[in-house]
Length: 273
Image (cartoon, rainbow, N blue to C red; front, side, top):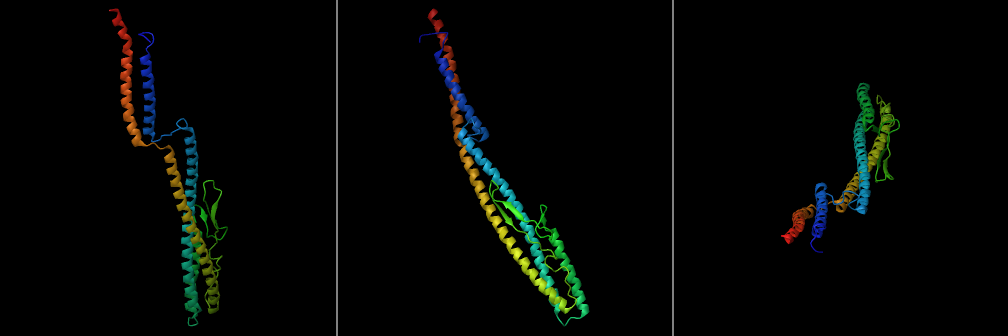
């Protein structure tokens, strides 16, 4: 094409190149601003969809972690309560054995019985107080099982069955040790109660360990998914920084090229001098 003042092909080419550079620069600046190479569906529809699915999975795992934390808290309270009741039963046994001793007189047994009654009443206090998040696993009436979800779609869970450990359930509330025979009867009940509490402690301890194992695995799984999402959508900021420098130089050169191209039609005037 010869000289023309109507069509400036050079300027059009320079403008196309500058537009392309500006578009690339906008992408790079967006990646630097957000830290993401795929911030939305327009950036890469398939990768964004995969990332969103994994984010949903991650959200489910966060709920699992919260559920496990609640279960762990409930188990800690239940174990603390059961251990305290176990210690009280040991004290009750000590009083009952002392009262069974034929060498004690009635006055001594009466004093031992007073202590015995106070300790037995404390068992009920502990059982009623062992509450976490409104749940109590040790009370007499309908103790609450401890339940925690263990997967992101809530299709599986851990259930630790509760067992009441109050004085009435353990058959120690109404016992007396004012006579040797009564002390012997109380001792039998206390031994059975100690066995029941130890069994529940074993169950609670095993449940607590299981919750800890699942919680540790859930955290590792959550971390792995988060890293996977990052690999899919995170921008390499070192690379993007280098690209930014390069594109800024290209932008300046493109502006200069466009300026030169726009001056080209002016050379036509020299033909008429």
